[in-house]
Image (tube, rainbow, N blue to C red; front, side, top):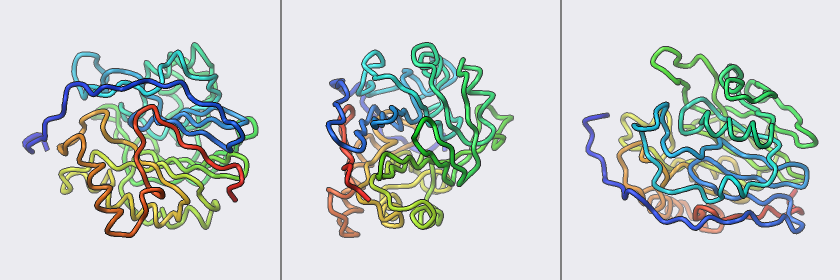
Length: 289
């Protein structure tokens, strides 16, 4: 992998941070903060997925994948966050400095797959719920289920697969929002709707997929993400996990271009599976379901 040629990325891409909009009658407002971090605002709770506000996806501040797009919502502009969904322990998804900031400011509950609790508590988080695939918890009045993913976990060379990884399904009123976390394509996408119900909005990764001989087992490419969207039969999908950190060899704009091609090949309208600019929001209709 280290010998593979890498398409150069820009050092910096301009981002205009936004203030998250009000619900105004929607079941949820979902704002793309960057990479795999979304703010999900509902009437019952404000939720962050895989919160990542650091400048490097690394245990060190001076080496490792560097952020080229700043977060689309400034940390100080976040509304009160009651719940964090943490999909797995990789550095670009489980950022301890960000968790420390959240612990000090909001004291949220973290929901995460099995085996991640000790790491999360080391950041000062007091309330952690660890779940297996298909288990459900309710935080406040918001039902949250952990779903399967095809991935792996590791923070060091010595702890590979000692903790579980997964995605999440969140109920917001009658609407269900699915956050895939990190995953390769696999048959479990076809199981989610029959087990959990219709998906109003799916948040699906499309980046960090080249070269396929190395990445196919852990990350979907855009064509596979479109297939996952179809398997889920989601009313809408939004792309994530691209354009923030260069983790693999493809160019910064290649995932979005490949998503356009994959949509056309499968006759999926852009309104059904789209990208958001960092800082932009999508509304989930309260009448869904």
